[in-house]
Length: 457
Image (cartoon, rainbow, N blue to C red; front, side):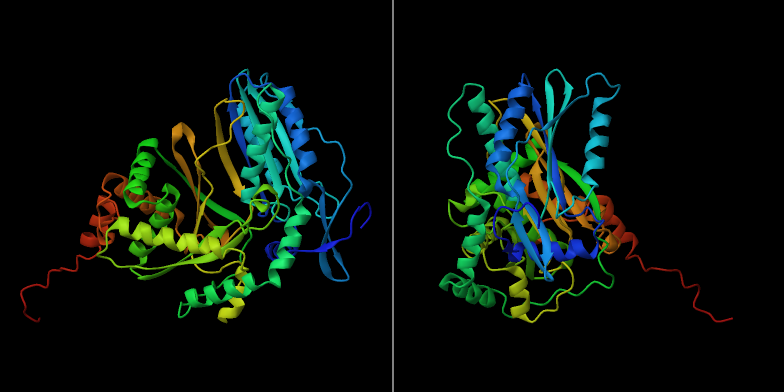
């Protein structure tokens, strides 16, 4: 491992699955995660580039490299070097937006060299005099979705300081500290307590059926927008139930799965950060985990009651979020079949406070979360005009058995129904439009037929 400046470390539990999946298909870009932020207004491109230079200097994961040593995957740090983000001025091209999409799309399709790097890229695209696009991507081995939001906030702090605002505060923490915390956890009493909690929680749960085909490690995607008015209605549901609006969206995913399947013992996959301490929450890295959210449904209960039940379960999952999902699957005796674990994934990446760049308005756009799954995934991010964006995804190998267009339509119906009438019971929440309901209930179930005059010829 030429050029390393520290002893190599083993991969964490969160990293191992990604490593082996990438090795199975080295050309697959599915583990490249990224997106962009459009910043409106008089942003100083030179100062923002300087802020990103400081950001990379603070972010130890940008120095990570990966290799096999005696057949075992290891990670190490290369020496720090000066970094300057690329700046492209697209104002003179005929269609800056199309050019920007082509540039970032091409970049997202490339798989970085895990041993030589770099495993990340920052790119500043000047689209017009008052719009700058900050594009950022990284390999999922080095960072998770939480890291992306942490880095966005930190970039805003650094830029504000450079423009004469308040101090940016303490720098980001070192990635190696996350690895040390993970090693300490595996031998701790907390690990034993978490194991006991998850085995109690999943006692008697049904193992999801395996898919017939191997994953393609390519993504099929449907996108939907949630308007500001609907989001405000969902926030009112949250206030009524005494929960967060993000927990209402998780509850909506539970409702959606129940109403489509009529199952009453619902198990979804809930992504968590794998970070508990304040120090860990200031460190970029790959610690993300996916744990089960198990809810028993009463169809006659009010939706507000269900939301409170979901919120309580989410809180308990947060308390026990460091227990590795792969270890839990083994403990349950379930067969390992690719990246499928517990059920459909609901991933809330939209927080209460979007990143700020010296108070200039900005809009985040997700391109990839850096992973794939054998089940439906619903990812929620901030959208335009104060609303939300929903990404419905599945591995392309299973796109026929997981109809994304149908899921998009029915999930939006659930959200709109909740926003319009928080007093609905679980059984009253619709998952079919009027046209679909007529098709299913009347036309497809219309078995009446003429049988003639009853005589035999």
